[in-house]
Amino acid sequence: MTDGWTKSSYSSNGGNCIEWAPAQAATTGTVPVRDSKDPNGPTLTFDATAWNTFAAGVKAGDFDA
Image (cartoon, rainbow, N blue to C red; front, side):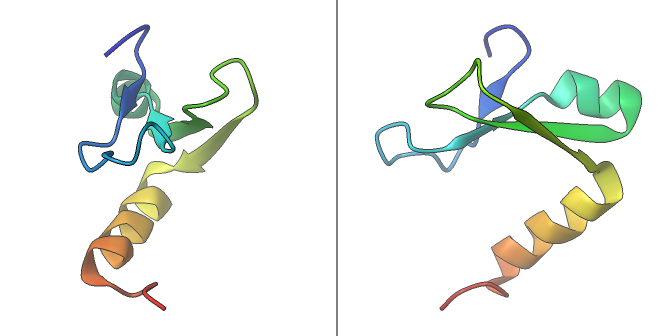
């Protein structure tokens, strides 16, 4: 983890991934997310409950085509 940001442990596609800042999520209740290819670009911030619901849906295959 560099400067508080970390990539998903599932990232194996050459870096085309998102990063998030778990320490900030733990202290503020919001999850900051950014494009790993553009670390100086914009950051999206999500409510932790909404993010956890989204992540659970991804893991469950709810968004598979």
